[in-house]
Image (cartoon, rainbow, N blue to C red; front, side):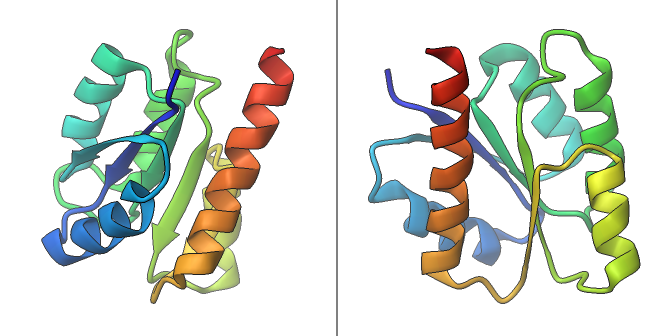
Length: 128
């Protein structure tokens, strides 16, 4: 079964770039444009991985990640933050709310793919 990745970003250009990076892999890609939409999709689809922007309207990435962790059915879904926030305090806060990784913009295709593959590989090793 193909891994499902939910990409969450309020900037259409960023969504397009990430979907283009990821679509060449054998993965199912879903998108959401804000944290509330992401939570709705996560509740319906239970993706294998969430790539999550931090600075979004309505519900930022930190709060979205916290809410993912509070729901028993979704608490183990890995979250990688994908953001322009590069200060150490921002990174530490990302890990404190439950992220497994943190990638800063501008994205490097090879880095994004390597990090996503590493998380998915660890997940499937744990399931076997």
